[in-house]
Length: 193
Image 1 (cartoon, rainbow, N blue to C red):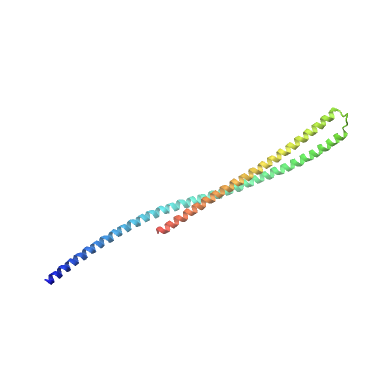
Image 2 (image 1 turned 180 degrees about the horizontal axis):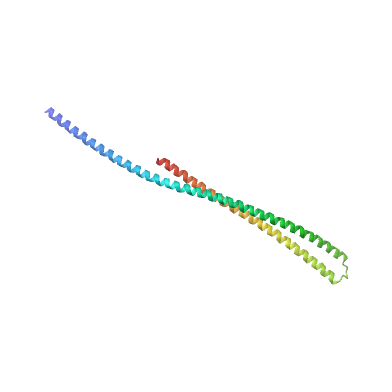
């Protein structure tokens, strides 16, 4: 009776071992299947990230191109503005010199007219004196208007330069953001591999 019991126990043990083996095999197959799915998902994600990196790289190159172009245009604009301001300044200086010479001449004529005038001077002399004073005022106004025009142009140049610098800063920030995104993509790609 003991030998039968032992055989029965041995048979049951073999069945249990076979059953456990089969269960482990199925479990291993399920794990393998799950791992394959994870690999496929990671591959798809990796492919998507590579596409995104490619897109971001192209966008970065375009931003760099636009930045270069903007800087070139800014430099051209600065040169044109500086040339215009220099030209206007030279013109204004020449006009100012002419007006100052005329003013000195008119003041000399005025002094001469005043010294020659007497209490009984005729009305024609007084009319000339008034005309000279009016001309003097007109020249002063003209000189003041030229000065204001130059100041306005200098202010326009400064504002244009400031706007160009602001645009450059914004583009630089965009490039930094793109570089950060690209670095994150590379990091994700490295983690996916």
